[in-house]
Length: 122
Figure 1 (cartoon, rainbow, N blue to C red):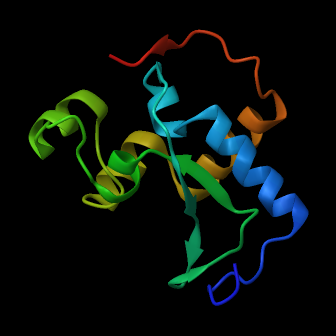
Figure 2: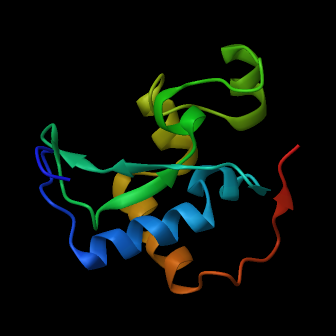
């Protein structure tokens, strides 16, 4: 992707983004919810993206605070917890720091396809 702050994606970058999208939203998985299609959330430092390898999968709610299914922000917050886009501090308190999210995402990618203890989203 030329023209982005992270530059063109390598083959490894493309494989990572595909893997995390196949796995689903890391915050939802922490809640035991599967099946929510994620965005690739690029972690930042000093307001700059760290690169495509420093990404975590977050659904539109957890990523930018976009409710879905005709639900309100209040209903989404009650069901899915804090949104990074709306409440970054509350999101980090509930789901972890950027470093913790990255470690959790990397562990999920390492055991991709072998998730246990989760339930389908409702």
